[in-house]
Length: 70
Image 1 (tube, rainbow, N blue to C red):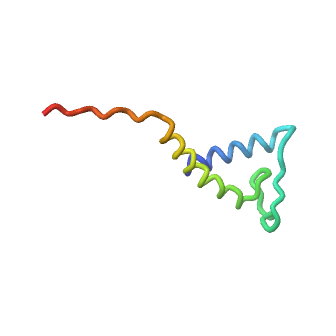
Image 2 (cartoon, one colour):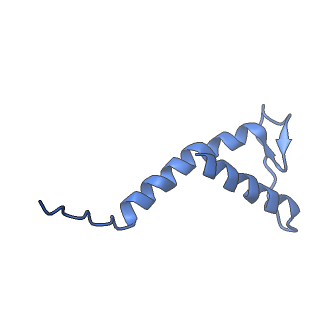
Image 3 (cartoon, rainbow, N blue to C red):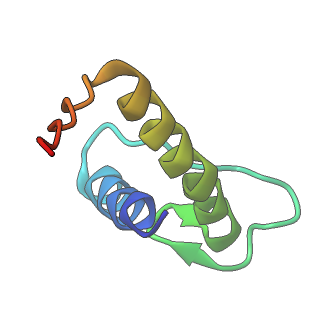
């Protein structure tokens, strides 16, 4: 989840400095912004990070376990 927050921070940084960028208009949370996104919006990156982990575990092959010879 920390990795998702770090990625989200950089995504919003690049959005802020791009010529074609999006602006968030969310009623009730317009007070504190980090770049263009309201600070409360960064909480959405937490479940997004877990979802990415789940997809990666399902898609990427699992390394075979070594059989121990006894």
